[in-house]
Length: 271
Image 1 (cartoon, rainbow, N blue to C red):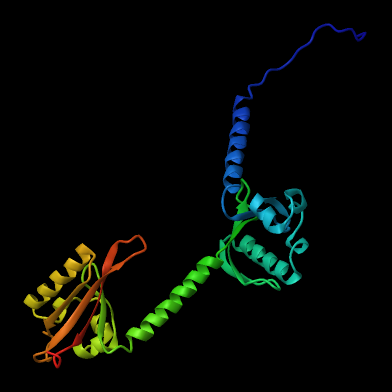
Image 2 (cartoon, rainbow, N blue to C red; image 1 turned 45 degrees about the vertical axis):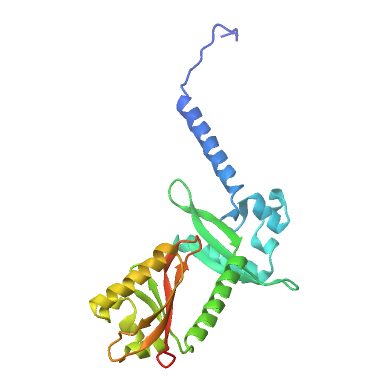
């Protein structure tokens, strides 16, 4: 009663599970950061108000700012108003719908070449499943787009050529099914393209002749070498006719044979 210390008492609490949970959280965050800092994509997170809460180093380099200069800011601090408004609208859509936003955006700064950027945004949820922001990533796909454009241009040139050539031209897959035929081939066969594609020589020639053609195809596929020879045409209604035949293997990007391309033309008068 006079304020003198008589004894002391204390409590002991087991916090092992809490410490383990804290350690697991630190480990998880370390794994997350080690991943996002090594990915080739620009990665960021924003809260519901559009303020940046995280950005990886690649994103920081793209903006030319440090992480401290980015966190707490919004798109309106770094981009023209029209772009910032678009980005904000995309974020709001993701948070409202809870759905992933995946698109390709085109950008062209004054004095610079046009670039294409792939953008993916997903909603961020808290432990109770409430949407608390968005996570996004983007990366430059200009080179891929250019390759796609070059491929389309190349295919257009190819088709403009084979569609006008006087030779009959076709392609087949490894199962011998026609995957392409030009108009001249259709004319000789007396069929429309849709009546030929997906079919094999067995659908148009007598079995013994079809087996000969299939053996030739297999030889090209198995050896990877060109086959060139003179054959007597066996197409129905063609009469006695000699054709010059050329078959070459079609390779994929890894150098594997995925089919054959062939052409033939009438040399009866030359014979």
